Amino acid sequence: MFRALRTVGLLLAALAVFGQANAADWKEGTHYKKLDTPVRTGSGSGIEVAEVFWYGCPHCYNFKPLAENWEANAPDDVNYVRIPAALGRSWEPHARAFYALEAMNSLDKVHDALFEALAGQRRPLNDGESLADFVAEHGVDHDEFLNNYNGFGVNARMQQAQSKIRGARVTGTPTMLINGKYTTSASMAGSLESTLEVVDYLVEKERAAK
Image (cartoon, rainbow, N blue to C red; front, side):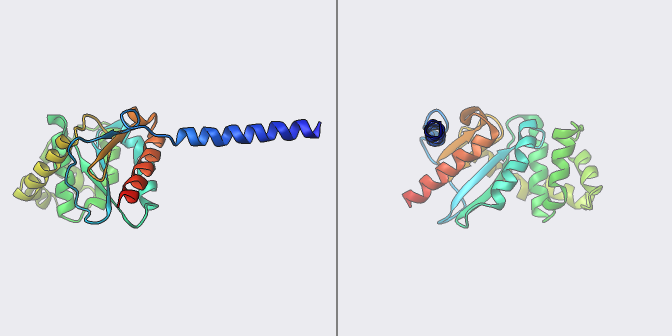
């Protein structure tokens, strides 16, 4: 009986190892896409991992704690960045808000609150004035925010970001863009958690290529 139990245990262990190996066998064209033409990154010799998101996206809202945990434990050679998408006209004010707050060094004050208000509570913060009123509730100067929101600097950042998103052929959020060469998402990887496993795989792939 002991021998039988031991055999069963070994079989289960082997199956577990096989399952892990199989799960890690991520395939181009299925679990991730390779861009025909890479897009520019700002990471120099490092590996850029970019999260393309929208504050009003419920999937981004659910992905947020997973992505933040991944970022907190990312290797030293990884540069994690966030790119607010403006895939529709109604998304543009929220992307502008991101860059306005970034320019004011105030993003940390309001980033979580914007996610909660837009994706969690679905509040109608859809123009510069309503967003300025909202960020003012969180200690950000109303008029300075609007000046940045409507300013040249934010316009330039918006154009750069949306050009990168178009170049990467991103059509939904959240999408992860790895070193300007690969994209993956929950719809490709199978789940939000698996998305980050594919990111791990692609980061290792890029590291090996260097």
